[in-house]
Amino acid sequence: MDFDFSDDQEQLRDAVRKWVDKGYTFDRRRSIERAGGFSREAFTELAELGLCGLYVPEADGGLGMGPVEGMVVMEELGRGIVLEPLVQSLIAGAVIAGYADAGTKAAWLPQISSGEALVVLAHQERAARYQLDACEAKAHQAPGGYVLNATKSIVTVGDHADAFLVTAKVNSVLGLFLVERLSSGVSTRGYGTQDGGRAAEVVFKNAPATLITTQGQLALEHAVDIGIAATCAEAVGVMDKTMAITAEYMNTRKQFGVAISSFQALRHRAADMKMQLELARSMSYYASLKLNAPAAERRAALARAKYQLGNSMRFVGQQAVQLHGGIGVTEEYIVSHYFKKLTQLEMTFGDSLHHLGEVSARMQETAGVFA
Image 1 (spheres, rainbow, N blue to C red):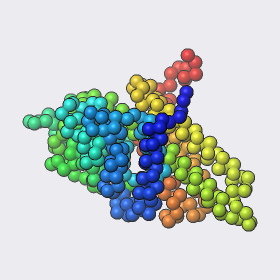
Image 2 (image 1 turned 90 degrees about the vertical axis):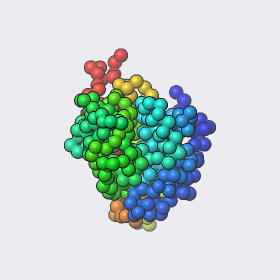
Image 3 (image 1 turned 135 degrees about the vertical axis):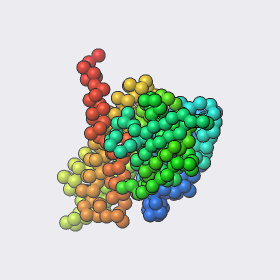
Image 4 (image 1 turned 30 degrees about the vertical axis):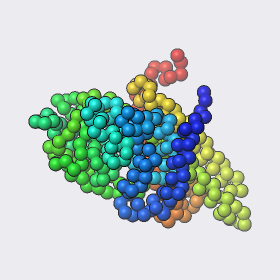
């Protein structure tokens, strides 16, 4: 199997890497973090590169690209631990393109692609953990459309988003709705997250909503799987940069008059980190390549990938801090921010324990070993 990237994919990688290196420095990230964890200006710059429209069809103003291009982009954003949630635009573009009617597509896809509208997924509820079928939100028909009542938690940049993709039950059937943030009955309470980003609690009280699909479970699973694949790719970028920072530190930090990179025990630990990184990279490729597979196959593959990525993220992050010593946990030093990002990514779209359960639940009698 050929795992080489095409010229177009390499050019896309190069463009994003240049933006991260020159336009999203660590100092700029720190200033965005201090200002609340989200910059509309930086998000607009991502949109100007065409990244918000990666999964939006060309007919609707997007680039019409696929999961491999998404993986390439998210890896590079991971290297810069970019706070702006491009993954949410990827989810929104793909879900609306795949499940909404023509009117909704025409109204929202060009705005998502241009970055004019930031649409984020709002599905998590208290006590639901990571179960996608746990939903207390309700929606019902009213004159002129639907109204929705719900409380959603940990909604990415929920107090800055322009609209939400919200799950709610209609007559016991899970549906997916689009609700604008400035609509009546919508209130948000924003807060900073552990990695320096931003999230919000969002309350909907008789909020007017547009129905995307009554196949809400299928749409939500698809949305979360897109998020998992993007998170895996982002984590590979974060780990790759963490490894580079750690190697540079070991080559310059001296004890007993020599660089600590000359100590065999530490070299073995760095080698173990590299092995975990490459295992994670291969599983990230696997996740992205399975995004267009049938639903059952896709769900199983994404759970396997996220479980392995969770283990790798924990190992690489913890070893990086240990190899740095005390400076590795200081706010002023860059590696602590990579460690916090890895810690949060491990819990995003389901933590390792959850996905281990998903892998187990989908195991056949042969456990995939025999035909």
